[in-house]
Image (cartoon, rainbow, N blue to C red; front, top):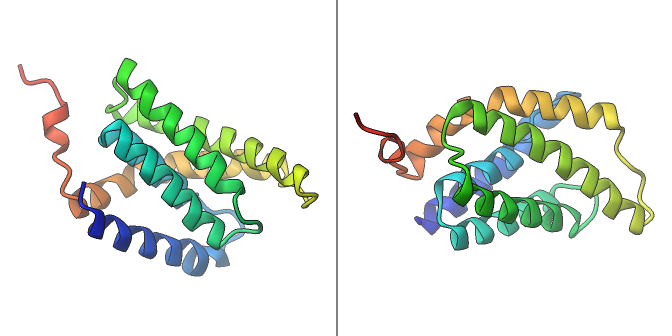
Length: 159
């Protein structure tokens, strides 16, 4: 794992999520797309560290501290363990993973917001964000894989 590149990537993604994408009413969750990317293409221990780190960065631009770090960390860890059983390296599986994790993260974050007595996010907004994230996710993977120097061809079968 290239940790310096990871830190730079997360800083850029956090700035893009908070700055550029905040002007849109509905936007993809770039941070959650990165959680799925690192859970699929890294070792389990690296995926756990990156999931909690990305959740911390998402909390810095979010409403409350700790809610997304917990939800991203738990779901990213679960996805990295699931990746051991099912190979999630094909694009349709990654799209489904992004969609499912965005929905689960939204509902888990809502549950954590209710413990802190913060207003909740509407379910329709969570669904729309999950759809947009699933559509944008594969397009984000290519530059991220290039930046992180991930050799995605080594995960494919050679006939």
